[in-house]
Image 1 (cartoon, rainbow, N blue to C red):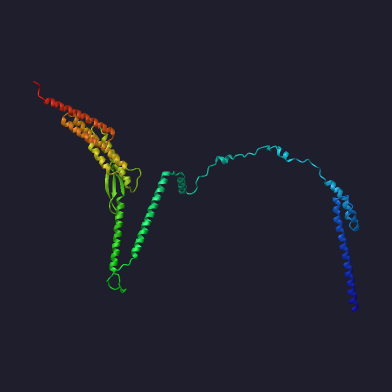
Image 2 (cartoon, one colour; image 1 turned 30 degrees about the vertical axis):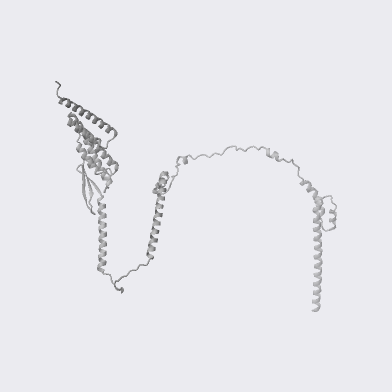
Length: 399
């Protein structure tokens, strides 16, 4: 056993030493081949150098001689031909032709699309919103209105600041007044906490409050009913009814024979709907009497105009009615003056002069005033002539 173990250990030692020698030889050969490879490029760079034969010292490296043969050939092949360099000036001044396509690209229009084309709406959405936006876009702004609004806002702001200052001053005064001690003596009965409100008194308070509210409701509904008007067409006449001053009911206001009902019919009319209808009815009646052949009925015309004045709703309608009345009064006075002057007596001429003076006091224009003044001058001349004749007639005849 001991011999076997000893033999094995010696065998192992020999093997290990032989392996180490082999590894050292391989390392040396590798170093030699690496040195040969490094020397090969030097041979390429300088083919006439004599350092290349030294690479033969490595017996196993055969790559170096091949490098000597192949290096010059590769260098000859890689040598490029020298071209003439272009200067920067030539490049700058060189002209290049513009490229043009043989056939220009064109887009053929879609005739069906163009035929059915419709521009989209400027504003889309609900109808009310569209209308509101269009009104905003078409709205005209006035600089004067903007300035007036700014002045109004400034005035309101100043008034608010003034009111706030007054309020703070009043609050300060009230606080100072409250800070002062007040001395008061009361001799009421002691409060024992057992007092109970009278239920009858409380019920009376509620009853009075309910009665006041009821009266207010009755008055409010009565006023609303008073402002309601109704129009009925019966037997060639137009009846206008007005609500009573009560929560319900109506009464006949006026009957207009021969009048036509309004174009737009309603269940309930307002004052602004009914009064112009009555006003125009009486104005037309006055115009009809004025257009009658012969002597017009001035008193009837004045009566119709006075009735129309009771149903005016605007200043324009009132002014037109007063103008008509003024013209009728002027015509009456002028007619009376003409009749009195036609009698050719001093007393009648003085009456005519009085009528003309009364006509001159009316609200008339300049043309009418000049006409009246001319007639007054004529009447004065007639009176002077008649007085001169009477004076001559009273003088005794010469002997």
